[in-house]
Amino acid sequence: MTIDLSHILPDQVWPFLLTFARVGAMMMLLPVIGEMMISPRFRLSIALATSLLLTPMTAAVMPPMPPTIFALAGLLITEIVVGIALGGAMRLVMSALQVAGSVIAMQTGLGFAMAVDPTQGAQSALISTFLTLLAITLIFASGMHHLLIGAVHGSYLLFAPGVLPDSADLLELVVRMVSGAFMLGIQMSAPFLVFGLVFYLGTGVISKMMPQVQIFFLTMPANILIGFTLLMALLALMMTWFLDRFAADIGSLAG
Image (cartoon, rainbow, N blue to C red; front, side):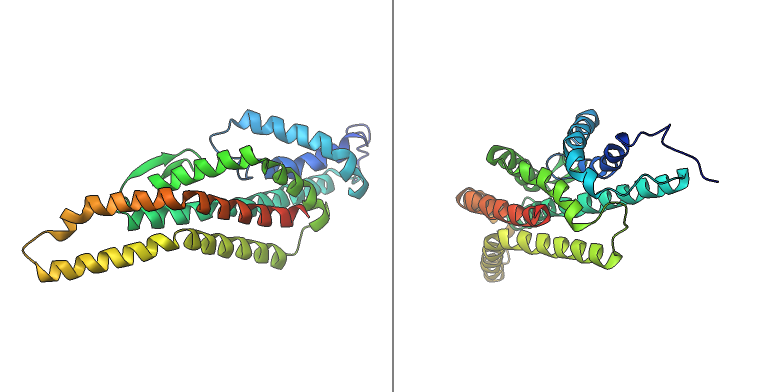
């Protein structure tokens, strides 16, 4: 049964509705803008405003309004799935900070120092939370949050609206983001891996030479002190490295 939807949904509203389906899904998952500590109402307001601004540019590539309710629902679900997939893929960039923070915490003896991460809504290593909040601050301070809006618009160049993308393309994007984030996290924490290897190797040798002394207990303050000193010396370089990678990955989606 065919139902004329023109009386229910005018042609001028249809491009906005389809744009909002993808943009709204992406805004709920995007890094920095879609963090859990940000109010859902604020994120919804940003999604509505962004959809309104993008509608004149996306209207030209939008499919015509379908004649049936079921076809309309299918297009909306397709756009929501694409938005969730792209937003989740971009969020994986921030996981590099979780990897780096966890490695640094383990190598400096702070692996059991846990705190609630407001960006994840769960407990994580204290250094991971610090690096994540610092990265969000630097992204806003440097104006790189504009790249996220550009990535939302660029998604229409990569994936045509109303067409479910090939699963192989989405999986390739996710695998590339996951592997890149893990590699970046290890690269950021590489100096601490070397420090931990040398420190614990030396501590182990001393412990074998003096088994009656609790060497690991005595050297724990030195381990933490040297770890914090190394973190202060390398923090600027680490965050610059992360921001460059963030700009490259998000910029590739923004075209």
